[in-house]
Length: 304
Image (cartoon, rainbow, N blue to C red; front, top):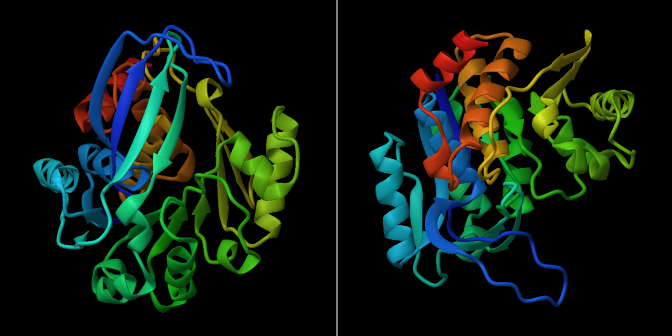
């Protein structure tokens, strides 16, 4: 189950609040903490804790945040040989507010993440080609992701894109993907369609298939996930839990999903494994600290 994650690493600065503020409003929070984050790093950690053999390709700054991030990756068994240090830019940071219902809003200052360049992909190419799955997001420069996917046909690797944060993507990029995993908002941006009802979700999935993606999984929060492929539509239900913090639930889903696919699970079963991991993650604070272990995921699956 070899998984290579290409993406971002941030330090999250989190404030817990009763409710999220309106524009121009100042409110008083009640808890502050820092936690390791960044979509790429979150997904790498989630995959490692779910049982994957993970390599991470990323850039951090020459600062305490970068040093702590690398130490954290190594602690969960991630291969950090390709987490390099940018001497000129700080490590990425994210400012996050989480309300009492577990909802959040996030602002990211990417820092060194934006210096992950196509040349870095060339340096790491052997690690990429040896992977069963390469998982990417869009907190790295789109030029780098596009370059990586332009070389996709050189390998037998499955390429999976979590298209977050949302942005328009070329048909050439989409056609290189084994799987794309947008949420409903991202699917709406990618397709130009409304994505709310089951029928609208299915229509968005079909449009992405028509653009060349091999498989589509649209994540739907508490409503689970919908798989759209050439065989039709498959809705995979969620698990009922008490949400504390939804930060990184999507990242945990993607990391766990890759582990299940790399282990040979069919996509519906892989989705169920990923839904269980995501459900467990929202019961804890923070991004990477909330990613569940493989035994925890399997225990929830056995219960329901």
